[in-house]
Amino acid sequence: MKKTTYILFIAVSFLFIANRSKAQDYKVAAGLKFGGYENGISGKYFMDEKISLEGLLGFRQNGVVITGLYELNMEAFNVPALKFYYGFGAHIGSIGQGTYRTFNGNDRRYNNAQLLLGADGAIGLEYLIPDSPIAISLDLNPRVELASGPFFDLAPGLGIKYVFK
View 1 (cartoon, rainbow, N blue to C red):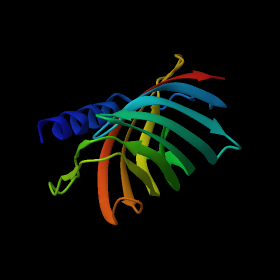
View 2: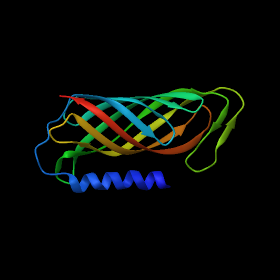
View 3: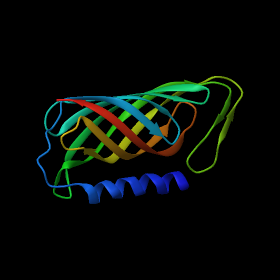
View 4: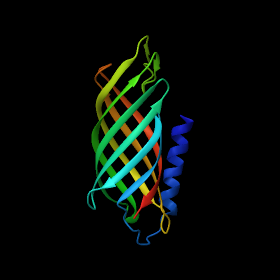
């Protein structure tokens, strides 16, 4: 709970810090994503002004997950540097023997390696710091695990990316 409160505090702080200066859009970004279950490497590519593709390579205890997302982006709260985004996608990965932590606390214990395969969603905010190549994002990622489930899961995420204009 402390982690979620801390992330929300950071997001609200960026809303108050944001000014109305004209922010430049970017085409490609690469960085790190810190999630509720996986931490890893992220990349984002804008196909046009509103549509982006995001890829994540996440590592978790005893496992690895690859996620691909199709996202729609728009200005948030009349702040050009702040974008609201939402989208959908899928993941595939594996988890070894151990405990699979879930959002609702119904953790699952596996005695053998398991395939992870399912559908993902994303909803969040991304702030491109004016006059810098840094973007910070905060999001929620609901997912339905099908291969080792079915069950629903929800994870918060905090991302920091270097943007290539």
